[in-house]
Length: 128
Picture 1 (tube, helix red, strand yellow):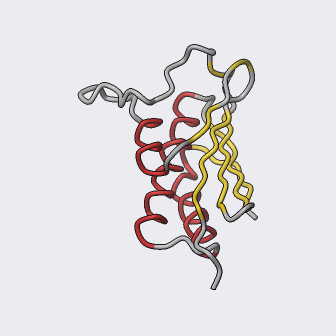
Picture 2 (cartoon, helix red, strand yellow; picture 1 turned 180 degrees about the vertical axis):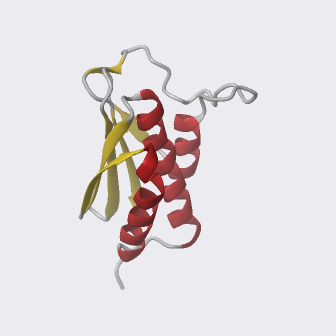
Picture 3 (cartoon, helix red, strand yellow; picture 1 turned 90 degrees about the vertical axis):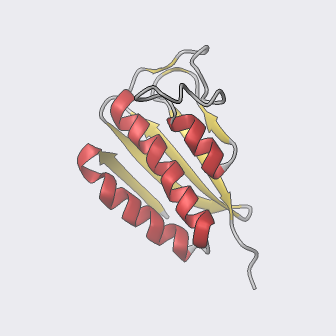
């Protein structure tokens, strides 16, 4: 459905493509907005912390819109923070995973060596 590489200079284009495809799949209103912001947070993390660029893959399955973002970094240690703690609210950074979870619900984050992969899922409206 959509697969594209991104970097700091292409984030606006990435958001526009994602929004268009998610809208075509039936997301709308706040669910659409929240999903796009959550994906943007994870893509930004890939750029800032994961080697300066990444790849976004968007697909559908089992009534869901599935977005996977991979970076070009060395991976996440098994004991890396997972964003459930909300981050330090006065820090300049460190809230991306928490914000993405708050907006889009459960996400999965790969751990270990190799590129990090984060998966976000949105339920699509029932056809009809």
